Image (tube, rainbow over all chains, first blue to last red; front, side, top):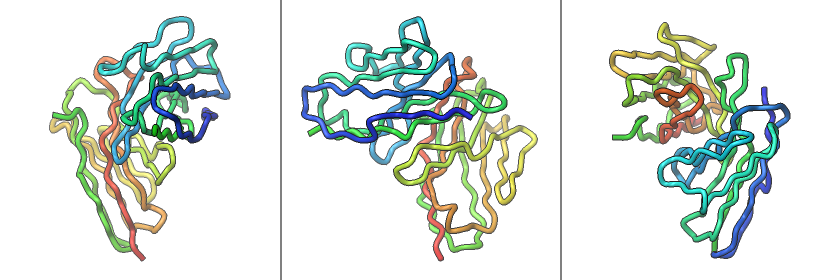
Length: 115
Length: 111
């Protein structure tokens, strides 16, 4: 099973600034997924990151606000740009692994508070 | 209509009780179904996959009814450690790799 190291685990940021979240996986994976979990809600997919190509963004999420890098098969970053209090949330990266390749494994999450 | 809808909860049950969670999904073309568990301030973790024939893992039983687009999770003999939020998860139609999460059902098992 994949092990994902995500950092930072939490941060408090000033509005208008940007934060970059990093995820390192202990094995090579084709796709990495970035989710947002707002307080008291479930996970919403932000984008799918493939190595060697631009990330694919879900409706309501744009590259200018959430630029993603995927320089190799074990690493990805998500940047939350020009933050506002509405961006306060938990951000999680995820990969699929397991015997059938269908089990989602998650990083520990980044708890972001924008003030 | 949400793609995946779950019982709103919260469920507060005594130890030893049997509790059932329900979930419906909107897209009949979805192929794979799961229950995930999320502890407070932790990331989600797979509890079990759900198959058409139904499957059981110890005290946990999952059922899928494709005709009704309905998924269930039954927990027997509840333990204090079962307290968590249970997320119904469905693969997106046309994609085996993108997941849609329900809003979750919170369970608290009381001593």
